[in-house]
Image (cartoon, rainbow, N blue to C red):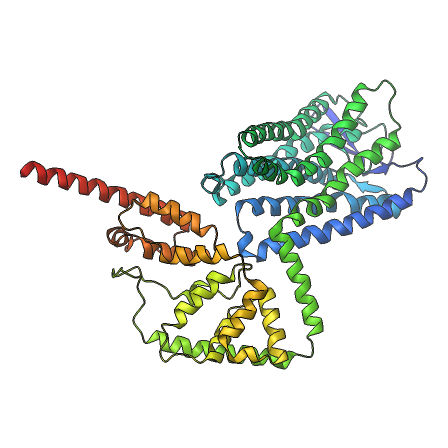
Length: 546
C-alpha cells in the first residue's frame, strides 16, 4: 500500500496514517446537484443574515444586554458551523474534488464538533434567559446581568472548545489500513474511526458519551426550563398575561424543534429500526439537520425580535432615503449648519451660568445636568413626549432666549433615524412650521408621539420627590413611572439623584458618578436605611437623657 505513511508510536506499535481520506456520499440519489445548489443558497442566506445580526448587535448600544449577547453568540456559532461544513461539501460533491488531507480532516472534525456543541448549549442559554424573564420578572435585571451572562458563555466556549481536543487527539492513535473512503458528507467522527484496523473501543465510548452530553444535556435543561415556565405561567391570574408570556417563547421552541428533533429521530431510527435505512438517505438527513438550523435561527428568532427588526427596517429606510434624496445634499448641509449654530449659541449662553442644581437641592457634588445633554443625538422612538419636555425645560433656562427658528434647529439637531428623515423632508419642502416651534412640535407629535398616558407619566416623574418616604418606597414609584416614559439611563440617573431627600443626596455626593441606574438605586437605599436607623437612635438617646 504505497499511498500509506507510517508513523512510529512508542517502540512496540506502528500506526498507519494515510495521506488523506475520500469523502464518499450521495452515490445513488438522483438530481443530487440540485441539492448542492440548494445548499449554496442556504449558505449565502446563513452568512448574510447571521452577519447582519452580529453587525446590528455590535453597533447598537441599546442591544448590549444579556439577552442580545446570547443572541449574538448564537449568530457567531451559526456562521462558523455552516462555514465549516457547506464549502467542503460543495468542493467534494459539486466540484468533484473529494480528497481531504489527513490533518485537515482532523481539523474539520474538531471544528464541527466544537461548534455543534456550542450550538446546542447556546440554544439552552436562550431557554435560561426566557426562564429568568418569566419566572423572576422583578429580579430579572439583577439575576441575568452582563457579568453572569458573559461568565456562562465563557464557560460554554471553554468546555466546547476543550472536550473535542481529547476526542480528536485519540483518533490519531488508530491505524487506517483497510480503506480511506469515508461514507458521509464530511470527515465525520464515527465513519472515520470505523475505518481503523486496530481496536477502536475507546473512540466508540467517547463518541457515545459526547453525543449524550452534547444533545441530551442541553435538551434536558431546556425541558426543565419550560416546566418551570409553565408553572409560573399557570400561576398568573389573567389569561391575557399567560398568552403574552407563552408567546415570547414561540420562536425559541421553533429553534429547539428544528435543531434537536431531526437529529434525535435519525439516531432513534438507526437504533430501533429492524431494517437499516438507506445510507444515502441517512447522509442526506444528517446534512440537512446540520446545515438548516444555522440558516433558520436568525430568520426565525433573531430577526423576529422587536429591537433587531426595527433596526433592520431603519437601515432599509435609510438606504431608500439616501437614494431618493441624492439630489438634496445641499439641504442636508443647511440643516446641519443651522443646527450647529443654534447649539453653539445655546452652549455659550449656558456655559456662563452656574451649574443647574435640582429643585430643593443645594448640595455640592451632584448637579442637575441640562436635559439637552441627557438626550444624546439618538431619538428614542416612540417616546417624544418626555424628550420634548426635557428640551423645552432646558431652553427655558438659556439667556438670551433663542428665537423660534433657533429652537427648531436645536430640536432637529437631536434627531436621528426616522425623525431625522422626517425633518429633512419638512426642511426640503420649506414648510412654514420651521419658523414656529409650536407648529413644528405639533406636526412632530402627530407623527411620532406616544399615547397620552406616556406624557402624563413623564410629567409625574419630572415632579416626583422622595420627601419623607423611605428610599425603597420612592424607588418603587420612580421605577413604575420610568417604565412608561422614554428617558434614557443618563436622564433617569440624574433625575433620580435630584429627587432624593437632602440628607441622602448629601451622602451620595462623594460617590462614584459612573454607576448604572440599578447600582445607584442600591447605593441610595443603604444610606437611607442607615440615616433612618441613626435618627431613631438619636431620638431614643435624647429621650433617655430627658
